[in-house]
Length: 299
Image 1 (spheres, rainbow, N blue to C red):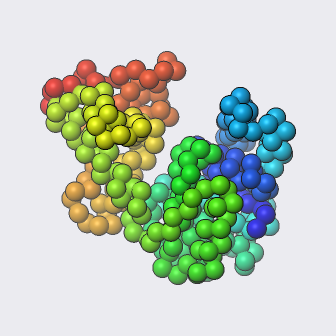
Image 2: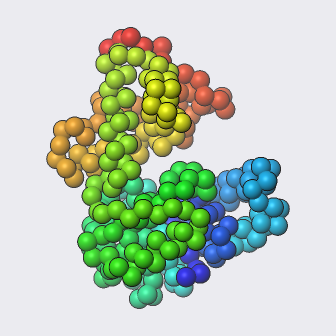
Image 3: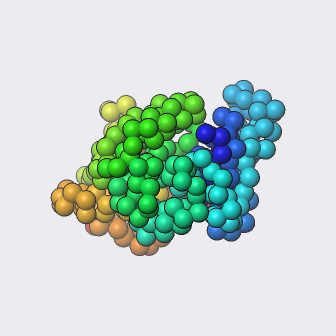
């Protein structure tokens, strides 16, 4: 397996492309427009520069990594010769189903189709293709070049051969793969998202403010980052989408998203990506945005 196509050049997509390219794979990074691809390359270059400054890689490593990445707005051409396609598009069923139907038509019979979905059923995604045995989940963590975990999700029909190959490939990326079964949210988000949601409910109920909640979880539970800041980093819209998948998949009211989360997403306060979430990032640093508003008051 040498030729990799990554669909989607956002935060996860460019991180996945960076990681494969740095490990010697030839990567075709695909998005709908050139501006998104140029932004992705700039991000990858900046992240490689940071690695060079920290002594993790050399300038030559950086040059080779960038040479390993090609970009394209043509999904058909970019995927035709791929050994593995990793889809990293928006966390939306309709978008993913459309991409996988198209990939199934244009990729060779032996191509493995992987999704970086954080919650959507691999079995459902595989069902829109004629190769369900070759469809699998590769759920990378953000930031991809740094985080070691890859959740490898087996769909109902994923073959042992494909699963073993993806586990091996993940190790070649210097990651630690963990095989999990196909349930809503898998392991990471089945546990993480209810915790984040409960932190938002706690804020909404006026139990404590933003900074206080995050400090309790950092100092009391040894979390490296508080749940509200983590939600900002993930994207509040992504958190909301995952909670809705969990709620629909399990039919359990405990997964119902907090009304505060729904309102913030509706208002466009999505976290780091929009500049404002539970914290304000618009000035280039993290300042409390909502702490005073929600501290010790119920809304």
